Image (cartoon, rainbow, N blue to C red; front, top):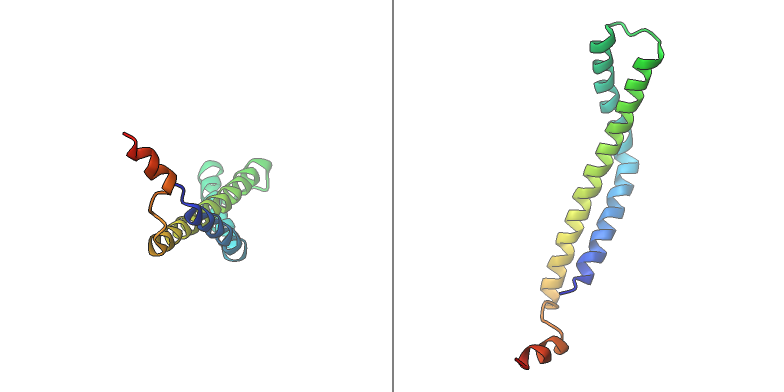
Length: 109
């Protein structure tokens, strides 16, 4: 059975999730990833960190990973919420009945 409303609502939810991430998730994701990167670089190279290349790479990579992880989580949650909302709308609209062609094909058995 095709769930066109649920699929459209999933895409809308994912888009809303990306917009919300852009406004409210990018900075906290980078901050938390950077804090984790600073702790990791401090454990590997000792504190205080020297201004060398490898600790900077670790911190930058962890900042990017934190932002990407936040983006994935927020987008997934909003896409799931949109999908559930679309399925509820389909159920309320009563569009879960099979099309007439499927009824005719099944009745020939």
